[in-house]
Length: 426
Ligand code: SF4
Ligand code: SF4
Image 1 (cartoon, rainbow, N blue to C red):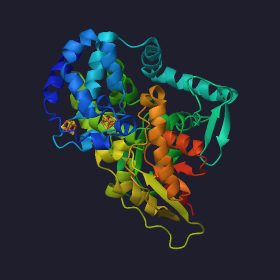
Image 2 (image 1 turned 90 degrees about the vertical axis):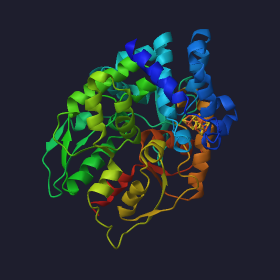
Image 3 (image 1 turned 90 degrees about the horizontal axis):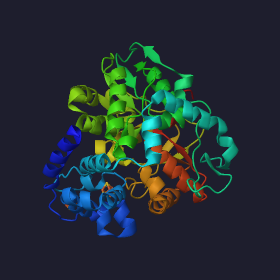
Image 4 (image 1 turned 180 degrees about the horizontal axis):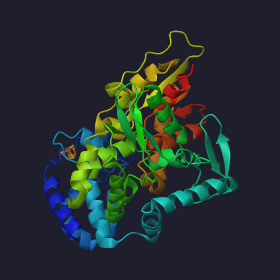
């Protein structure tokens, strides 16, 4: 209750910053689909101004309207008053969930599974073993599958399946000293890379090894906590934060890198702001030395130029994840990584930084809107005639894979670091 009261006081101070200018309308992907003022930041902030009263009248209604948001940060990135929109929405969700409680399904998933990393690992390993019974491959190039029988949860989605073996089983830990570069990094793997895209983690290790960068990869990492916080479950978020800080805070390394834009942005931006007083300093310390892998490779170590002659040319287009470009201002570095991968030629799509429509649980709750946003992205990708769509966030990879596959496009979906790692041996 003390934490919620503090959040309420902070929220009141932050809300008055909005001038109600409406400049957030033109950049909001949800408003672009629905045209409703209640879906844009200005409308939601107005709703929250009366939170104390409306919370007791209709908390469920307020929560639903607040939830219809991708937390993409497009509004905040374009706000002339510097309103911390995502931070306000996260605090408001925590306050409302604190008052109403979690739904039984969310309680089971967040408190029962996500909050217990070892159990979450076991459950997803079981899921990986049995998923073939319920799914069948649908697009080999994109790497998608669909449900064998109609399922209310999966609907007509084309999804990426769980990897047969998660990364943490293949590589439980690493502790290697700095090599020729004189640098040593810690790696935060992230749930999606660990369980769905272990190839990205292998590529990260391979590239760092080649550049003579030492690696610290601790065992038994937890989720960064953003799925819990997005659902207003502050207690699970705090539990995961404490779990991860215990593994990294005293480690000897220069920089913490992740290949997941959402994890990077959460550790860098959200952990210090939403940590409880007791470990806020530790969260700030770690946030201060956290970096996206592309940013580390380009800004902190020197990438070799690609070999002069290559056997094949691949046309690559790049999607800017909101959590990289809008939250962390990282956009030139992933393109430099692609340019350093031999045989890759970059061809920019229109509106490369328009949100893909994923938004975590938003995709589950508002799939029609999510698909409307994502299909626009798929059409822009197809227009480039690229062979490969590259992006720096595994959540964007899931959404774009679904959209490209449903649009009948045979375009591979990769992380920039995978493209670089593939060409290291050529
Ligand atoms: S959030 Fe920012 S851009 Fe949107 S109405 Fe308020 S001040 Fe204007
Ligand atoms: S975070 Fe994104 S979806 Fe949410 S209100 Fe802002 S621009 Fe719209």
